[in-house]
Length: 364
Image (cartoon, rainbow, N blue to C red; front, side, top):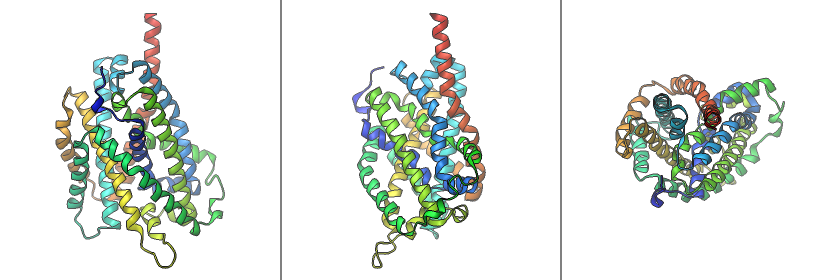
């Protein structure tokens, strides 16, 4: 397969995309669910989950280098054949579709609860998805360009936020350092490895990154950067609110940005941080919609998969409107997807590597 130059993204753009896809999980209700289990040691879960899923990243990266021009499902077809890959692809499509539906609805509820309480859910959700659809229709290269364009400003805003939060932090809230215990942290770390699942799913776009070296450096750089950012934000929440409060706060990030001020004169600056957060979220879900359509196109042999972007977005809207509230959405539906989806993310790359190696032994 010859890579078409106009479809490729560089290392900086790919780095920004992966960071936005993963690190935003520190700004939604994922933080609340993790704090509910591991209390003030929740920042350790972020590191532990990454260590658990790291072997899957290493295995998949080895396979991508070996096949060079193939994405995740094409490697699966080389290992398992057509029909098993169809099943894997359909499961992956279903997980991506449901996860995108429930997450977009969750972010809409977050916006509505904290910033637009009088706006009807359907109107705000529809508008949000239309903006993300517009980004997805611009294509992979354009999404990458926008991601890198806003990345420096988002970094500055995030650095400013963490700095402003430090004046209200209480260091003693870190202790006991292991919270409910090392075993509870280990269990929660395994449970939430799907936090980094996006870093594996993005391998569907491997043929559209300039080179394997670019892909590898950008991916691992983005993963390490995301781990640092999320761990820092989780720690900031614990030091600011105390773990007992964070477990009861629906949206810790939104509460944190309401908490900051610059001196006694400049207050209520949450709009500044909200603007950059919203830009990141739009880029994230533009990529999600694009990826869902990409997987759908491969599974059902649709070469021009871009034509499915609008129907897929409509399907996301319909599914996302089904949960009656964010409690059902996050604590029931999304948690179920994370619980079962993590096994596919964790074991598929390792299984692919084993099967490919066995085939080489048999042939050799």
